[in-house]
Image (tube, rainbow, N blue to C red; front, top):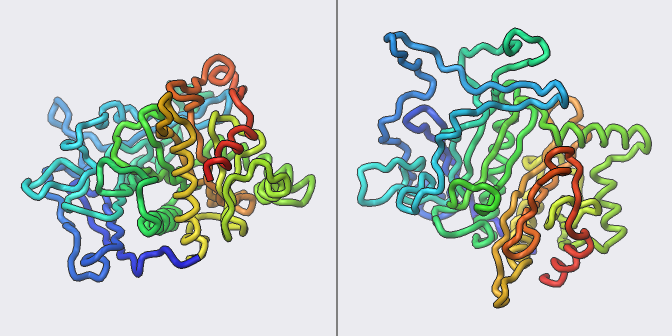
Length: 397
């Protein structure tokens, strides 16, 4: 396969007015060669996000950041991010905070001061996880009850803007631009993995209003968690049981079993395999895994990253034709696509990189709602079979 990577990718970091980090990943001229540089100053009159907060009595209260509480019934940590209630919701295109600044404006309230960009990454203005310098780090008991443990919801949340074009989507991008995004994912995973207290890094995209997207501009997010998430914890437990019983690696053995069965394989390339898992929960669900054992995105070779840019795009474009309306026109698929990467502490050796893409759409105009048994008992019931979903995606190849 010919290389799809840009000739070079230039990484340029700066700081926004309130102290958050912004990074441009450029693959186009004249920026990639350094002949020009994207705008680095942020002219917005934003206060430092960690500055003490004025109180009615004239005193200053320190910023404490979000907290999280442990559910004693499940052991899950639940971040309490009340400030996110006021985040931007479905703005018009001319007020989108992810669009580049306008040429005719002194400054906009957007998050990216440049008038154009290739790929941009910045710290979320409304983060669910935030490490506040100098904030208390010791856990405490809610209402003095030891049963209810709480601690700061430390970590970091970033936004990845896939394109400066407000009306595009990931599936509209070129393989070269996707290759730049893969580089950004890997760069940020490596950097966030070095932060104190981070236990896992999750790169993901929410696409479509049906998923709950609040900004339609094509973008994804990255969460650096200060704890191991519930799904990952469960997967690690199953992987440890599998290794103890068989000596094998669960995620590798799942991939090899899918390859032997063959029926649910929907994409194959030199380095990647896409399949509908045998016990898929969602109306549409696809996993994409490397053939080689890789722990995380930074561990991918250049050839694997090149191949991923092409294979993932082909998969997304098929998924956008999975459903058609009464006139036979494709119905764009709402989805969540997230990269499962190895944790950074105990159990890292049990991890294996793979993408999980899922959709709540079960038919044109119909969504899968997590009602009684799913929401109340976490007992899933599928409305279809993995074999039917795989057959449809194979038909679209």
